[in-house]
Length: 225
Ligand SMILES: C[S@@+](CC[C@H](N)C(=O)[O-])C[C@H]1O[C@@H](n2cnc3c(N)ncnc32)[C@H](O)[C@@H]1O
Image 1 (cartoon, helix red, strand yellow):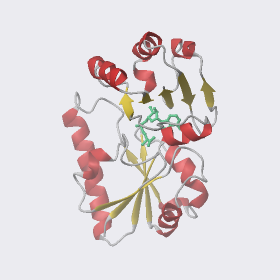
Image 2 (image 1 turned 90 degrees about the vertical axis):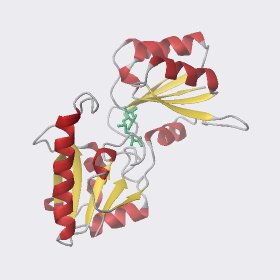
Image 3 (image 1 turned 30 degrees about the horizontal axis):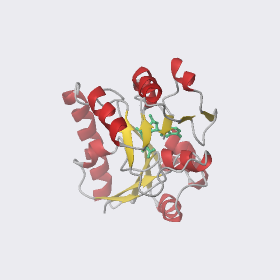
C-alpha cells in the first residue's frame, strides 16, 4: 500500500481533479495537516469537505509552522513520528490520502515527511497562482517570455536577480518581505497585481502598490509583469 498525496487546489471545491475526488471518496483514512497541536482547522480540509462522506475518517497531523532549518531536531522528531503513524496504517492495508493545498510539489509541508514513508504517489492540484492568473485575466507568459516563481522568504540577492532576469514573476509568501517587494516593483516600474485568499472567504484583488504598506494575509500572491 502507498499513501496518495492529493493537491486539493487553491480554494474552490470545484477545482479538484476527478481523480482526486475519486481517491478521497475511496479512502479509509484522510490525513490533514494542521499548524497547531490538537487543532482541527484546515483550509485543505474545508476545500475537500463536499467529497468526504464520513468525517470519522479524518486524522489531523501536526506540522509546526516554524523555520525547519533553525529547529531541525524538533521538527525532524515530529515529521518522523508522522511518518511512522502513516506507515503503520499502510501496513494494516488501509487506503490513505493526504490533503494539501494547491499542488503538492509547490512549497508543500508534505515534502518534509516524504523521506520517512515507504511509498507515495501524487495527484496534482491547481496551484494558487494559476487560479489567480485565470481569475484576474493576467497571462503569465506570452510569446518568447520566460516566467519565474519567487518566494519572498528567499535571500534578498537571489530575489533581486530573479527580478532582473525575468519579464514575468509570480511572487509567493508575499507577507514575509513586503518592503523589498514594493521597492523592486517601484524601481523596475513594473505592473503588479496582488491577490489574497483566492477562492476563499475575504478574497481580495488589487493593483494598488500601497497594499504592501500594511501586513497582507499569509494567503497572498503577486503577479508582476
Ligand atoms: C506553503 S505555500 C503553499 C502553496 C501551494 N502548494 C500552491 O500550490 O499554491 C503558501 C503560499 O502559497 C500562496 N497561496 C496558497 N494558497 C493561496 C490562496 N488561496 N490565495 C492566495 N495565495 C495563496 C501564498 O503565497 C502562501 O504564502
